[in-house]
Amino acid sequence: MDFTSFVLYFFIFVFGLCAGSFLNVVIFRLEFPNFSFWKNLGGKNRSQCRNCKHQLNWQDLFPVFSFLFLKGRCRYCKEKISWQYPLVELATGVIFFLIFHAQIISVLNWNFLNILSLIFFFYIACVLIIIFVYDLKHYIIPDKILFPSIIITFIYQLFLNFNLIGNYLIAGLIGTGFFLAIFLLSKGNAIGFGDVKLAFLIGIFLGLPNILTALFLAFFFGAIISIILMIFYDKKMKSEIPFGPFLVLGTFLALFYGTEIINWYLNLF
Image (cartoon, rainbow, N blue to C red):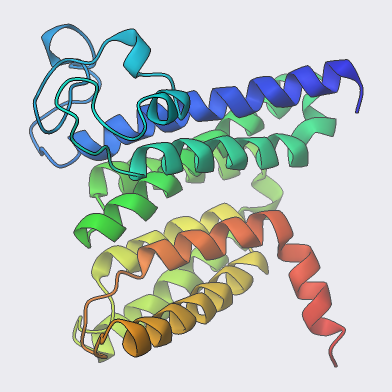
């Protein structure tokens, strides 16, 4: 890797860390339905400690590094800071890094559509990370995040992949149809309706055949985690385990390694 490539990759990773810090703000402020995280990012409503409500200074807001420097505790009240914050920042940095690596050849052509594609993938990554964390914490997938992303994804595919729009729509219908059937047959006990809507987003984002890979991986990891929870944490089958995080995990794996996973599977036979 030459110096220019190193600088680009490093910049993208740091940019991802900063984006992850913003996602933590979004995740927190989504808990307040009437609170706009766009209008109230500065001034008296800027970031503050959740325990003592002290407004955070600039030196408290460096992604990951502030958490490490403060040893995971608030500078003012010494209350423990949730591990969610550095983990979301690191995850966003790594995912941005992987997206850039997958797109770097086209991006370096400096074509407007290629740059737009990179921005779109960064946006969807942010949406999926928000859904992962919020569903894990609150057992709900927020519509105010999900619906705009469905509209933006459809518009993106319509204008940049018009000749494949049928593929993406079929993939979306397969994903949402499959989960809608589960939702109806279980009367909402097996999955929530948010998963039905999320599956449509994933379908029109990934297309065929990667939607199938994402669904398979989601159920695979969901089954493994459920078994572990039942064995070690006395979780019952009726215990509420959000499925959104597994769908997000399956989506990222299918996005980055979908072709390799499909080829590996086909070579087994």
